[in-house]
Length: 357
Image 1 (cartoon, one colour):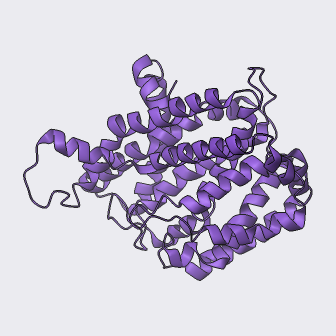
Image 2 (image 1 turned 45 degrees about the vertical axis):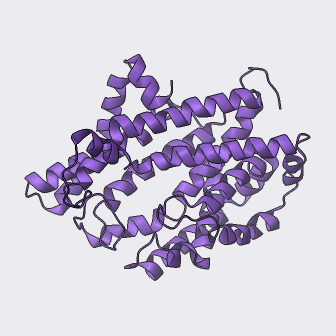
Image 3 (image 1 turned 180 degrees about the vertical axis):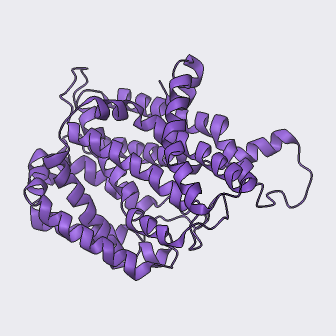
């Protein structure tokens, strides 16, 4: 690994994949909080069932894709940083926003949930204790903690593999083996899944990060995906349609869905398709992509508490039909975090606690 600070040329399509995926996360959450299929949400209000199809289409792969991109980015980062510098940055950019986000914003998730669930069993609890319990409702901040853990595991692997043999070996991966990696993906869906906090699917998320670092950080491997991008895209979309049709009405976060061979084949083909298609059609930079690139992390960290709070207020104090609720919340979920960012980014202490910078 290099320890200098010479900046490497940015790969625009990697930045654009990250930004576009976070946009999909926002869209997903607007639909998810009103899902009709039993997926636990902060607001037990059912929306329009047909829109749940968006959740079935996105949920299997979009967070896996973010871990792949994070793994690729970690490889690029470690080309210009020592492992110690990398570790310090991970603490500042992941752990600080994780804790700061939970304390400054996460309590909103718990506060909303408490309106529907008796979180304290009918007992009188001091306000400060309530606040601390509310802060445990971290929402999407779980991604930051998960990413930090696998980043530290990566540093341990690098300490063992000092000559970077694993990365060199992964660079020889051919297209048939890339496709066959779906078997490892499927197997990982059974591994290290905690029984209560189901969002921490450690096995598959850690594997995705490591595949990003070791396999998809090679330009030769990515070139193979680019060459067959259209074919992968057609297969992925077709499998997505089958996924929605086959599982519609079931809990799409259940083991029965997430550990099914169809789901894992679909998510893998979609990841390969995105990595290939992005090289063809998303390898550019303009004012919009730069704007999103700068704010995508803030969008991810800020959007959910603001969305949940707005959704609670709208569904509690208005009688808008659900179609109108979606139409109000969708632009709000984009506009409110951006406005919040423009304010907080000008307050050094708050900026550091929420964004790590």
